[in-house]
Image (cartoon, rainbow, N blue to C red):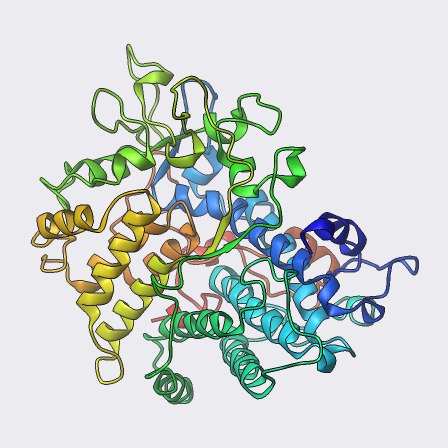
Length: 517
């Protein structure tokens, strides 16, 4: 499949199930194309969304990143001020691009040929659940049951977030049942699956992990009907298998390369030091410094981690004078300081070769769709919240940290030394802020180069890690949700809820259902 993934992008971009675009009659008809021919494009476009605007927005709002004020005039000013309107570019891009990507998944499992390609349909359902969850998490109610019908319905109704969540679990259950009941389909999944190359047992583990994430998000909900459904579905996962270290991180690589910008791994296209042509990347890499808040946590100078230096810090960010030095969000330039005074992205975003003669272009690096660290922290959280069903919270917590250390090129022994030192600090396992705070802190550190949106959403749910506002913030707290894009109000006016900026910063009927109390 790798030889024609980019052909797939071009051929089916317009065949995607957009919510509000008229589809030309000259476009290729989705029903005439076998599902195996566009699974690759669906998976790859979905990953591109995950590491795009919502990735950057989440890292800024979690106060992990700050803008380089020594080169740019007012970087992230709108994000710092918490200007959350229907014109928020990053939010609009996330909504629009995510729906395009999800439309490709829907086209696979809704295809008249889906019965001939049951495993392709199952993968598409799992990936739909993986993506659609974040639309609910960031927006609340959204089009789902009437979405993805192209010209047959350009103005879909908005479903309740709780109904969408329930249907995502049902989609996952259907997918797993399909895989188990069709062990040898006539048209098995092959290398067109850019994540597991048709390893359906790994897809079951992936599905179970996403299902657990969806169910755990609802742990604060008090509605009896929802709680009964969640508890029943959690029980069904009691003996399930999830993504573990023996499986490795779920990665995607449709032959990423540096032949042009479109063919790079989008994570590195957005944030690495080198562009595809070897030029320096200003709008991504040069824009971003570590924030002073996050630097303090990793350095062990924040009260929550006092005295524990995170061994990962030197892999994640470039040290300045033997430590990490960050910019305070919203602060002006400091006298005598310059660009080089602050720590920028490290890891594979700026990596020197073995001979110390040149920087490495990591355009061809695999992307991480679901990490072992995320899976283990979910299992730790499950054991904390539902101890009658799940066990070994501390073990999963430690395994999550070890997986993160491995991700950044460090050892399990280094992870153990670190966790032992952190143990009694407020953000340690035995610290004063509690186990959920400890899990959430490690989730933030481990996932901020993989899936920071997962940390931000859990921050909204738990309040941890404690995350300060920028000095220029114009609101009393971080937004509980985003405002629907302006094109939704323009093209689907009758169905789109009227959410204002004022609604975003208080809990009300527009807040995602799992976080209203």
